[in-house]
Image (cartoon, rainbow, N blue to C red; front, side, top):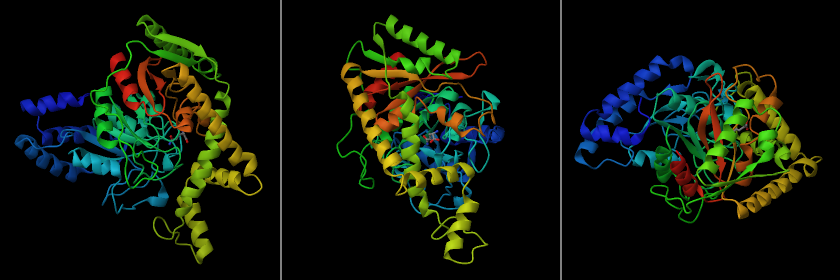
Length: 469
Ligand code: GLN
């Protein structure tokens, strides 16, 4: 199994593999591992045709930088002329009329998009069990979850069905499945990657990013997809630092770890031990690592779920059985069209969040919940900035646990929400964060370590990861 794009390019150059052959190989792994349920659709014929055309260009020496990169797309990133469902019945069989900016940028560089990947419905979840098309199984232990919401994006890479994938991260959906599957997952600074063509969940939190086997591949993909976009007013206006060839700016760094993230209830002993061991290895390498206290840790989950459900209730109001998507056959008038289509089309978790979000935005409760949560978001941002005045990076486990059993938490939404306790911080603050592999637990399931960096320091964060790898 290829785990690094540079090996593929070297083999393409030497002629020991051709692109059509490479695509064949991925297609056969996809077929063989179908039961993992990572793909909702495979673009078989199109991938084969592209492989032939790009191979030709490669031989002529005018192929793009991603010639040989076979990539999967989370099913909430749109691709012109292709179906996209956000793993929801409400968008079943919907075909997109345009492509996301990230898709256009990938295609311009000759990446091959091999299919669309299962996820939690509208990216709401932490285990991929909220997909209308069934859960994704972890390839390391098929009785366990893949993580979520970008579960298909993680397992497709983990199991060798494609080299890399793009997911989306609103509160941890790239980093947590990457950590559950033993991979790298990166959430960029808010606005560094265009959201144009990403089906919205919570727009002030959402961002697209890669899941890969290696830091190099992550850097290359970001080099291609990141940067401002006229179609997304919240994307950066200024040019951003280059990812390729980025160097660490200091020989030794100052890391903070939030003491509560190791002492919090529910942090599995193996996760705690692996994080402590990582801290020791940083110290041994001459870096400074200090434990700090972050008293806002306990409010991160309430703030995140108050604000994201509010934004979701507004974003998802467009799915009304009117212009597109599922329309109930039982509808008789305007109101029943909306009610019945939404009742039939949305799954239980999405409904729960729409109701929660509508509640926190309602006139009587707006000040008590929504506007209060906005104020606390600001506090979290300010407090985080303060930490970065003294420290270069913040480390923590990515998730308090390793991949849990399918079904273990599905009837306990609060337990499921707590899986996001360490990842939502970066989305609330808008800062970059990465999950890197950090050993295994006693069951052979991967553990992830999260590193957060100051706003805009994405390239430096990945340069650091490359130097630590
Ligand atoms: N698990 C979180 C949630 O359910 C994160 C989702 C995400 O990042 N898309 O909201």
